[in-house]
Image (cartoon, rainbow over the protein chains, first blue to last red):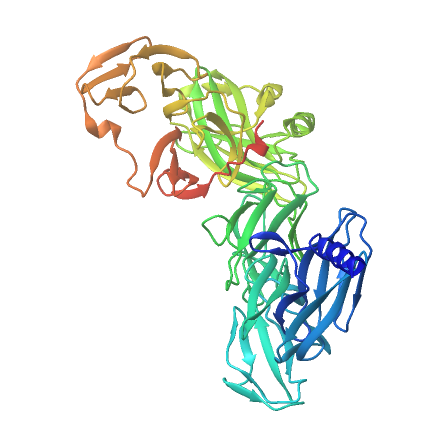
Length: 421
Length: 169
């Protein structure tokens, strides 16, 4: 009797060394511990603390020990597969207590045949931002009696779901189809709650591919010396906002061949739009320059690479401005323009008096070296300003006009009659 | 024959150079040359910074900065100065609008003269800012973009000035 009392005291002392975590902290357990209520498939974890290096054993279906630490802390997980009242024995270093828990029947949410526990992440996969993606879950009654679903709350769109409240007979199931449309790139997580059982819907949104595009100009055939407007038009409206770059490549040496922003422009494509935006405008200026060669435009964006080439053909010299003046005893002819072949050759000047009568024969000159030297060193494409000085022996005021023309390999350009004021 | 024309043709081609429209003040308040021809502009590297107002007429101009108002000659060199203040410019005159005094550059010095507001007229176009950049050329700043406005009678036209720094030279 004495021995029995001593053993009981020793056992009670050991039971006192087993603690269970409560909202008020770890508390000593009695002979039995109620772990609480959960649903089939939903784990219910409870933290315990025993002696350091304790030997822990659990006997009972649905219960298991995990996260056993050397200091004696461990977790008991209750994971029922069906509804009902459950119990198990927990033995810690020779001392046994009773664990009790309850599983209430509820509809089981399954995804592709797998039952989901409370708190599970339901992955919708990876889609382009702006694209709707759907998942169909199944609400199953695996119990032996009719279950009622009263409330389904979610941030997703329910495209196919039961009318609530739903009375689901034992052994029956019903689909629940959800649709998520991520509006921007990145992770999107939305809640799903079925009668208080919460899940997380997750979709990963990738950068959307841009629709097919084409580069449009306000002039189909381009020539040197133009400013044209470029637009990027897309085959269909953008589902979500996107963007890309417009790049200009030019094989010739001409800094005037460029977009208003340089050789590269960044564009945005607003959601719902079919036209790229360059800042506040839906087009961008391109200069064709003054050099004959090929301009290549390239539109780049997610899933998109579209090019368009423009051949700038050689053309006769273009004269932008010409003026003849008297400066002392000389006549000065100033010509501003461009030669996109950069091979201007001969020039001719025919002077006339104030009455229009020719003054001698025309001057024809072929200043190859001067042109070549200028175009090789200017680095400015085909633009030039020529200042021709004609010393006059005699009364320079009697010279009334000069008619001139300039030629390159493509053709001749008449500058016309320049009256000398 | 009362006159003869020289046949010294080698003298004809002593000068072939890059054409220049003039000088303009960009969005960063820098004065830069504008090379090229109409519609094919090549902005050059800045020659002055922190410029408050600018006017260029081909053979001279005006520049206003924190240091005051400068009269520039055809090469861009400062040849005369006025104290800083709100001003409007014409090819040869600066009108200090707060004082209502005009100064005319006579080629050697600035001289006080009566104000003739008509002399300071600018083209009647929509603009956030408008400044002369060369003979018959104006720089129009409008809604964040720069334009070159040609006002030569019969050849009026507007072009966009590309502004990115990557072409500075």
